[in-house]
Amino acid sequence: MNRFQNKVALITGGTTGIGLATAVKLASEGASVVISGRSEQSGRMAESQIREQGGEATFIQADVASPEQVEALINQTVKAYGGLDYAFNNAGMEAMGPIVQMGNEQFSHLMNVNVNGVWYAMKYEIAYMMEHGGGVIINTSSVAGGKGMAGLAAYSASKHAVNGLTKSLALEYAEANIRINGIMPGPIATPMMERVSEMMPGAAEQFASVTAVKRVGQPEEIANTVAWLFSDEASYLNASLIPIDGGMIAL
Image (cartoon, rainbow, N blue to C red; front, side):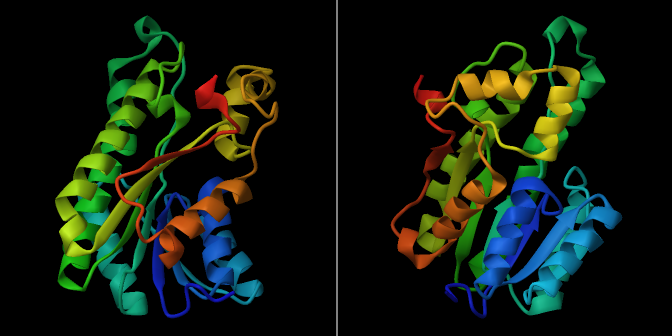
């Protein structure tokens, strides 16, 4: 399949996990992919992996918590490949624990990455797309953005905010031919899940137990849905938040 031939996709948080799996998927179907993240080592490895598989990819280092770096990222993406058709705002971080034990700076940093990072990205992505005929944006939220989760209050709050941004901006820019949707992954086998499991031994198994399918998902299962959302097959889908969670949010 070459659904994305001659298309340009930007993926923040694209060096590992869901972002990398999505970059591999899009590149395998013809897209030129810009992978962004903070780690140059991980970024270069991801870039090489895609190119070795016959795809086209470029790593651009950026921290989504910096509006200047995000603006530069958009400009460099356009310079590298001549445009921007798809944007997957996937960068994010986790935070766990009771609110009384969480430092104020930790909470602020979480919100700056998870919420402000999506805000900055969409601000500059939308500005470009409005002047160039439109595009498709997908934001990574979480099942924690659709329900309360004890011990994850700060993270849940950040993902509820992402959902609000997604739906509101989709309505604002639909007439500019810009589709904006969000995905709400459940427990997925990613480096983030590994970090959570280190802090809370047995966390992966516990999360799996509260899904309908009783297992943790794989990054490729998320990537398949993201690719479909970018494609013309999803052309009538806008302002939607799609759980990809093994039925977790329904329980």
